[in-house]
Amino acid sequence: MDFRLNLLMMLPESFRKRMIGGKTIERDGRTMSPAMQMILYILEKRRITNDIENIGAKKIRDFYDTTAGLLQKRPPRIKTIDHNVDLGDAQIRIREYIPKNFEANGHSMLFFHGGGFSIGSIRTHDPVCKFFSIMLGWKIFSVEYRLAPEHRFPIPLEDCDRSMDWLIDNADEFEIDVNKIAVGGDSAGGNLAACLCVKRIEEGKIQPERQILFYPAVDTGGDYASIKTFTDGYFLLTKELLEWFGNNYIDESDHTNIYAAPMNYQKLNLLPPALIITAGFDPLRDEGEAYAETLKKNGVKVDYKEYPSLIHGFLNFTIAPECFKAMEEISEKIKSIN
Image (cartoon, rainbow, N blue to C red):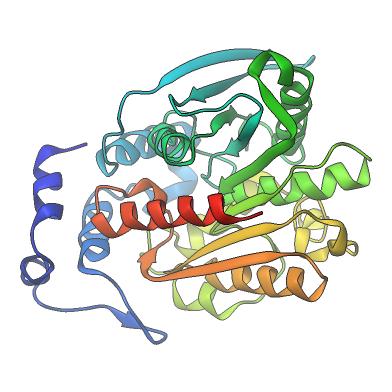
């Protein structure tokens, strides 16, 4: 985290407004917070995705790793253990977060990071998992699933599914209850969490207790107004970048596959309870809301919350007080769900 940025975010909102020229961004009946405008300005200055096809995945991953650390609040110390998990045809890393207030046989969460299935890592979401683990008093298990385009659909989902199997098989060692394992993820990670629930129903496996989806991508074929409204500079989720992510991950023929687009699942009523969080200034906002409404209509218990002044990826922007406050509120919401 940059110390100067931290100081800027601690200034009164009126001062931050003056720093961005006193102008506010208003779209679709929502007003973006000044802190989000400052973050967008920083990201725009660091943008490297104008020529995305020629840059390559590795350079974009390195950029994301650097940017994610710059804009996150420093979490308190927490014990972590890295596990190298043998999946048979590959080995992946899963990081276990152990808060001091964890109670044996309590709740845990299997977490999948975002990044369009192509970027992101345990490292980019390390502060996110640390804060949630401390706030919830849960063990968090963050999965470093294999990334596209080197590993296309359905490999990342299969990695997540086998990670769930591994966690269940070792539940006694980790002192967790197999009936209290939640799955969660942000953006592409939210897609993987939602699709994992579908996959495990279809295969007759133990289901997660609940799904916690942060601004998830859940409908690859949907035509939503927010995609048209917010694909111009909102956390670099341009139309070109969204297409690059999608093309890296799935073929055209997979757009309706229930393991890529859970909105198409015909047995939604069997899914576990869901908490779905969206941001007001986000191309994925409308499909997240639509998924929440569709689940409700199918009898699934759903809690839905939009943060209207925030942008896509806000869990990684906790240097901004409103993003950290949102994380605290979400943690309280998670704990209140029965």
